[in-house]
Image (cartoon, rainbow, N blue to C red; front, side, top):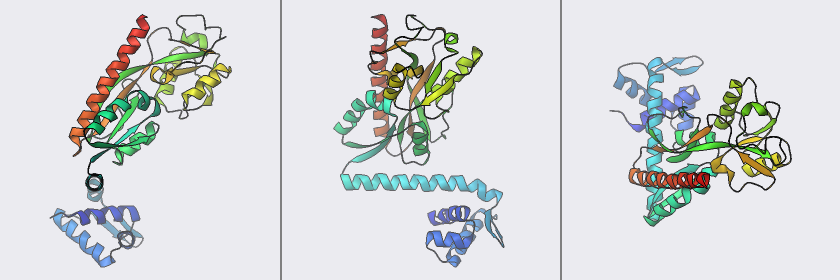
Length: 308
């Protein structure tokens, strides 16, 4: 019969590279580690670890078992954290991640609704790589995320991804830019301009811009990178460059910049909520429903603004 400690031993051997190292990491004696490994290999009737003079490595079967062991141990840590938090607070705790622009407009109403039901929300703010890592490590149960249209987020089947809204990318120009008087700006008109982009060049918005520019035969040159959209507007106003800013992040534009849509097929990022299938399912479902409602309100406000 499989036991949790058997999985701990397998993982420790994989991480430490030897039975002695695994024993030290787990505060076991080496004979205890050997015993648990023997029981585990007997359970599968196959060798899981290759022992050698320089340490120990997992066999192919051991490598097959390892991600399952990691998932079980991760889920157990999550269960322990949830139960301990609820016991300490007398309430359920939901660990939620968000990137700044989504947190400001989408989350507050949803969090208020959960608090009214006795659910405590622990909030982590970060950029997309931080949020995805938090989900994969199970430090987060739910996170607001974004992606290029058609991109698959690198998350396993333990997560559900619910679309919320399409966030258009708008061009921000200095007020005295030669294209500032146009209602829609052709992208090819900007081939000689410098750009202010995201801190991470792999950001979906920057990759989308590169793809669109490539269709017009040029590559955007980024002279400044920042994830603070207030700073972006400041540098654009100062004439450092132009920028594509998500509508969700635009806020109230500065008086010394102008905001224009690009001509042709609109560029946009997809905003979604990724949720772990966990024991907190009712709380997760409530949060997702609240976020979908708020996203619909935001989209409707944008539509009214466009008509007005």
